[in-house]
Every structure is written in C-alpha cells, then in structure tokens.
Image 1 (spheres, rainbow, N blue to C red):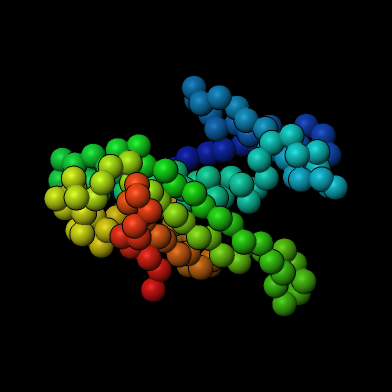
Image 2: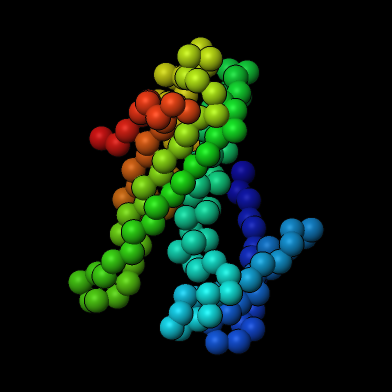
Length: 150
C-alpha cells in the first residue's frame, strides 16, 4: 500500500515560512537562525530532528505495545550535527538519538526483543539513515545504558 502526505510551505518574509500540514493540524512557522533569518520558528534541521525523534519514539512504543507492555513516558533527544561537505556546503552530518525509558527496564518482560527490533519500525529514521549516519542509545530511567551504537 502506498500512502501520500502533503505539506505546503509559503514564504512570509525573509527566510520565514508558514508550514501547512493540511487538515485539522495547526499551521506552524519555520525560520532560519540569525543572521539569515530571525529565529522565529524551528529551522529545517530542527524539523528533521523532530521528525526522527517523533518517529523513533513512536516505533519504540509500538514495539512494546506488540507485547502489551508500556515503556512509560519515554523521552527522546536527537542531537543533529551540522558540518561542511567537500564543496563547503552545510549538511547534516550525523543524528545521535538518545531514548530514555519512563519505567525501569525490569518492568518490561520483552525489553530485549524490543531493543533488537524497534528501529526497524521507524519509517523516518530508516529512510534518513541511507544518507545520514544515525546512532541510537536507549537508557533506563536511572541512566543505565540498555542499547548503544555499534
């Protein structure tokens, strides 16, 4: 099954754009950081990081739901590294994803299975990582690392 979504952006001024997601979803503003823009909204890099974080979090919850488990209030932070390519153009060079469980991992009987498979459910990160390196770390609420890159 093929699905299609459409997002329309309309320039407001300088580098500020109105983002229309369609339907009942509220519109948003995106802008570049100074000195080009005024920083009136998230940058395209922020939007990319948010898309990866949202999809990865949803995939993590989905993987647990398959076993009727709830990982609690999961917190995901994506760090987006921006550098220059060989033509001196800015590019996203890496996305580091940190997921922290909202409950102790001992409360999740199938934690090992979900850690092994949840990334495969993430449409956005699986598409993005073809061109941008991704690393994923999962932590328990107490900071113990349950899954790390490599």
